Length: 127
Image 1 (cartoon, helix red, strand yellow):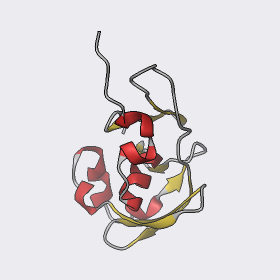
Image 2: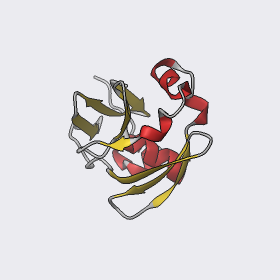
Image 3: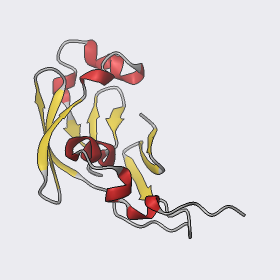
C-alpha cells in the first residue's frame, strides 16, 4: 500500500522508508510522531496481535480487507502469517503489502484520528 489517508492524516510507507505525519491545516506543521509497532503476531481469521512503542497492545481484525486490492495476496495460504515489522514500525508482508501503523493503532484502540491528532479537529481556514 503506497499510502493511506485517515481523516486528514497521511502515512506513507514505501521502499522501506516511512514518511508519516499529521497535518495541521491551520499552520501546515507536523504535530505528532508516528506510532510504531514493536511486536506483531498473526492470529487466526486475519487478525493481528500488536504491541506499540507506547506500550498499548491488543488485537486488530483485518478480515474485511482480505481480497481487496493488494490484500488479495493474503488469500494465498500462509502469506498473512508472514507478517514482519519494518524498521519504521509498520507491518508488512511479502510482495510490498504494508499497513500504516497509525491506522492500525486507531483501529485497535477505537480512537478517532481527531482524538489521537488534535490538530485534525481544528476547522480548516480557507483563503
